[in-house]
Image 1 (cartoon, rainbow, N blue to C red):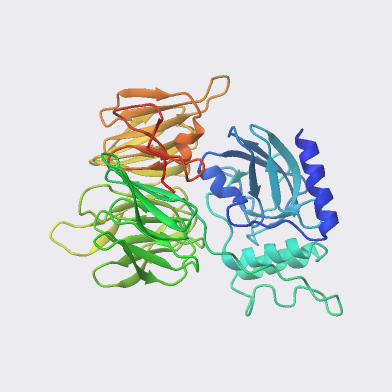
Image 2 (cartoon, helix red, strand yellow):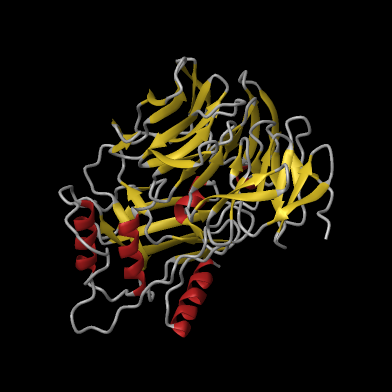
Length: 480
């Protein structure tokens, strides 16, 4: 079945004469799908740096399309090999999208480049892992340009990536990549506005963009009502609700008069989370972390090369935990290594927030704020809890986790066992399990104050699961 899907895609490419590219709401970037638990990705070099064998497993019970262009592969721990950036599927006219049937697995060869001159070339047989972050924006411009012009000399493409990472290239990333006298290169289309969740939940309230330019709000003790005209995705809320307008700009929802206040120009975001203090954190695709101060109306850059963030769900707090990428800087000043977990918090008696180290390690893949500290998910499936400076094991065999103020959802996908999700309280005791449609737990909006999960399959129907009622319960239908 999966081979038929790939052949159909190649046939479509030949008919249209253009590579398939990601479109908003249609194709999920590979690292995003992996971080959400939707897919499992494995990779190994086939021909050193220039070709990788990639396997993608769809863990959902629904079809899924992923885009692998400009994704980054990391060598195994202890290896001296370079990082790898992905181009397009070999044997196609620059195809970068893979479409998967429910629970299907795809394996194919993908063109690639090395990213770190001076380090060793990848060795066939090494087990590379997908990075939680894609390549940098300049590298992405080159790799996307390559997918639209697949006959470009691969060594020239790789040389440009090296030059960019060595700060030796001046000018547009793709300038003069096509040889002199060649046909004019094809230019990738302009990026569409950002995409993101259509559902958000906070403090017992549910917000849904209903697909008809309306933002609907539902109190878990009340009913639906229209709270504004809207057309963009919503950010995760632990306090104030923010969202995108159609042009990609960011606005703040003013509940007092059901209106939106524009707070910033277009900002693509991998994560957009409001803090309980009412401020906004935006983690951009280039891994830069920005903060918008609601009172001052100003933006500031507070971190670079950040892989993921988690806000402390304490009333009035502006604190957060962050997981940092390789050989980067924390707070623009201090150095951090891959898997380093840092906390940014306001020191007692001071109005200034400072970064401080929580743990240094090479295998932490996710961090979530949790009562008294944080939870850290290791690549081995072990979950470590940092509680008031002490570290202990809090779970094992965990594939993903989502923490709220008083408990955490652990998603277990172990070999030979049916996948399930378990809700574990702050005391470490399991409260209940969710066995039906476990993928919902990873995809649903999470109210981090109440622990409720909110799921909307079509933006018309909404279902809620809470620690008090641990089964999916439909809310009243959204009115026309």
